[in-house]
Structure formats: structure tokens, C-alpha cells
Length: 199
Image (cartoon, rainbow, N blue to C red; front, side, top):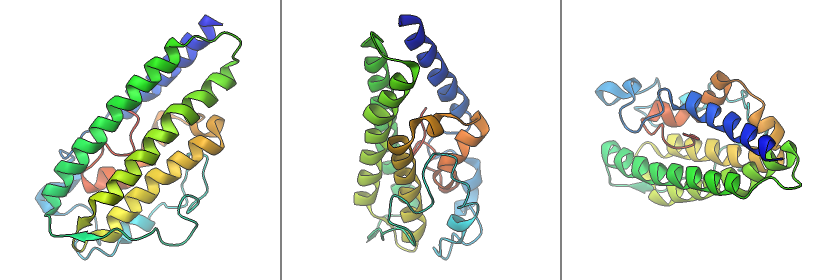
């Protein structure tokens, strides 16, 4: 059984390593010049709809927020740069907690657990709670005035990943590294690529 758990841990670490590429904090090159994607300056969230049907995470579109538009995020007087700095710190802390939780779970041993059970435990005991807490904390931060819809879409993206990990761990993990990276696309485009990332 120990070999099964080690294999699962190795697979998870490979996914984490693959997801690392380009998932840093506010240094995302797509935000150079203060603008990231078409429609962002007006805060209309038009970028949020692109590829929204692509949900390679085991959750249906809109599942976490009940369908339709995500719940609003309150506006703040902070600049985008201030928000990005705060969100990057918050998500960086959550990522460290996620890695620590993964190590603890893998350290428990696999006595009597199948690979499917170990995968389920990782998704439901570590990943989903980490993403749920991250989404809640991001929502509490608010958003720069005019960017509320974009930030709400990012929060919804993370909530959808958490719901997918809880509902169907096998589907959550059964994706290529490239598909896995699509999961936090909106966060990366906004400059907070650490949010909704596993590594």
C-alpha cells in the first residue's frame, strides 16, 4: 500500500510541477501596461465568458454559484496593483497550506486505502477546503472599482474547482497538464496566477 500512496503523491507532484509554469504572482506578462485582456478596462467581465464552457475540473459551469452570473464582489478604493499584491500574498499563503496538507495526508500512510480512496481524500480533505477558503478570502478583499465582475468571475472559477474536487475527484485529476493549467485562466490573466493554482 505504501507504494500506491507514493505513486499517487508522485502523480500529484508532477501535476503541481506542470502547473507551476507561468503561475506566479503579479508578474504575469499579460498584464503589462495596466491592461490585461479585451474588455477589462471597462470592468465588463467580457473576458470571463471566453471558454467558460471549458470546465476540465469535474464541475459544471456555474455550479458553485448556482448558475448565471457569479455573486457580486464589493468595490473598494484600492488600485488594481494594491489588490493584486494582497491577493497574491493571500493565495501564496493558501498554496503553502495546500502543499503542507498534501504532505501530511501522504504521510498518514495508505494502510487499507485504494488509490481511488487516496485520490478522493486528497481532493476532498486538502484541495477543496483550500480552494473554498481562498475563494471566500478573495471575495472578502473586494475588488478595484470597475473590476468587480472580473474578480467575481475569478472567485467563481476557484469555487467551481473546489466543487469539482469535492464532487468528482477522479475527473478533477484526470486531465493533462495543459488542461489543468486552464483551470485558473482568469486569475492568471488578471495578474494573480497564484490564485486557484495547485503549485
